[in-house]
Length: 114
Length: 113
Image 1 (tube, helix red, strand yellow):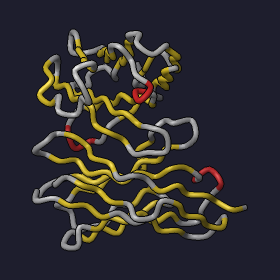
Image 2: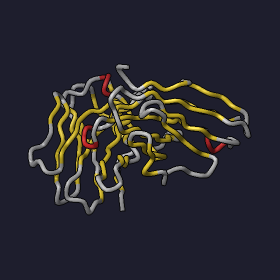
Image 3: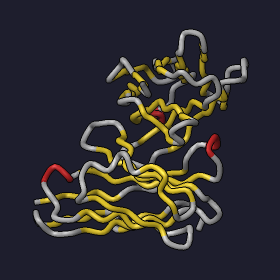
Image 4: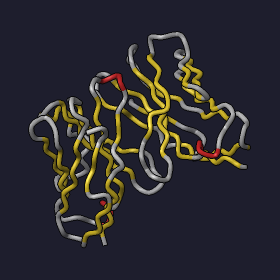
């Protein structure tokens, strides 16, 4: 089965604090790619961070980092020093090599409280 | 162009009419994808092009939906005899290679009345 699960439909955090968004996936492939995308109200999907499954090191992009646990098939996103502009829907996605397509989770709506 | 361009940005159509949605990918991106996003939902895969061929049409919800890509560039998604359940945002994305992640367009919001 090609499924990506985000168990938190909504999250909120105080500005300047840290928040973690959860994601799990199901795959039998050994080599794959994982992504987090951000979708603000403008509806433009923006790539936040990318992880290659064969790499042990967790990816980091400025205030965004992931905790990739391959054995547990878990891929969470940590946002540090949250800013008002981080408010958006966040989608976790896995690229399946066999099917050659990205499969997305249902999304987590993140609210930043000033 | 610099990004993925989709047109129109918004489309309102009457039930039963045909609509065409256009996607102009980033130059040099050989892979092109169409997704559908219903209100408050995740992204539903529709179809994938590699060059001009469509190896995977498995996500097209019915035979009213079709898509083509010409010259390895512009793609058109056509919905015939539109129904109210077709109302959604249709997103197009392109990528240079499979692991690079997609670049998305801003989508077409389709409303069937």
